[in-house]
Length: 147
Image (tube, rainbow, N blue to C red; front, side, top):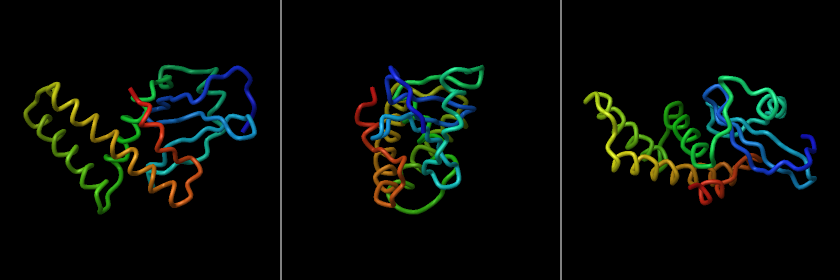
């Protein structure tokens, strides 16, 4: 973690199809967190701070808070399996996406809104579970400010 003056945080990135967030710490430094495909939790990723802020490239894009929530939940829904309410909602989204794909069509406006709403909800639920388990990168409040 390192201090960066004048940086408006949090910032969200799509780093090679993986969500990364930069957040401020209590000490006034910057911390980076990258989604773990194995657990759905957050891995410390301070090595990426300079890459996402200053180097960029075709595979590194700053994204909005809502895009971050959607990308995170898209990944969790794709790579994780389990039981309980969060995983039932992931199955619901997968079912919708499978139907859309099988019918070879774009999702309707209603389907898009439903998927986005479910993902916003599962983000909060999953982050709350991570927080209870002591994941230092967990922050369910990110989705409440998504627009």
